[in-house]
Image (cartoon, rainbow over all chains, first blue to last red; front, side, top):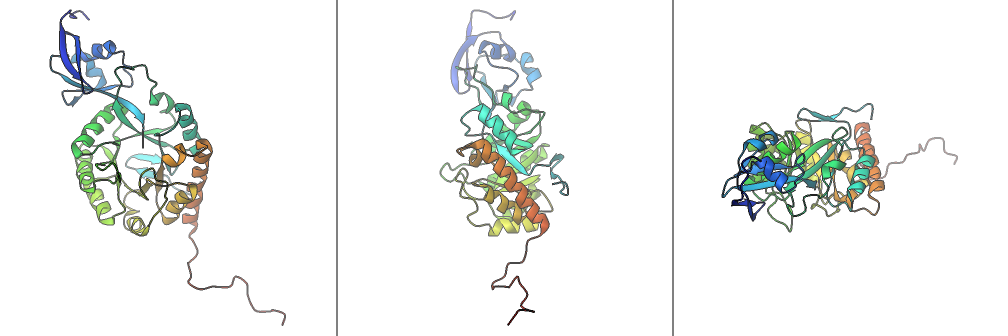
Length: 74
Length: 261
């Protein structure tokens, strides 16, 4: 989290507007929201990320992010 | 069961012809125990948004052992081809598997599949290397088009999802099985309510059935899962045994010769 600053940026997460610290990558964002990372998959600006890519993708102002996991269903 | 072959969906093989959904269970533990009682080898579920406000919620996957079950993500809730394709990509990454059940269901009252959209979504995903099992109506023409689009399995509904009505009319599913049963597996999905429904599907020659509500909403899901297992086995055994001919009139079982008069 070397680049984490006090400045907040506005992003959309799962349909909701959120303000989060600037300078995080997607992996850090999942930690920030305390999401269980093993089960979660992220779509970043309509692109599905491989889980191992999460730390390579920066979260920027205006990003639209979907964080999903499996639930029961037919 | 020893004399039977496995049902093959693409490169995946299953000895159990009962596939099971994971929705509507009261608890994860009950679901886990019902899956075990069913003897299933293929379990289906869906991706949904993580609740950011409650990130500690238990995960379904903790209760679906990957060593025991093949995971089948599905696109339940998707109304359009675009949504289905997006969900499929998310599911592929989450499951690390190319197996997907395509459901394109725009109408919440009927939960009928949009068959035109289903054909399109099947083609897009099959071309991208997915092993696609497609939920559809009992229309043989659509079944043929799904196979042409690359479906690895065709899944015609018996009756409305979650209705437990069993078969309303199996005339056309019968035709799907006769025409395409040797081409791809035909998996009767949706609306089955009791083991005799499942047995009936297998007696018609279906390769497998997919059951969710009938087990999850039974008074005793674990027992019902076990009953469904037996129903599927009985139906499959009957199909392999070859049923007697149905006759319009009576035909005596006992010889009349040698009767004392």
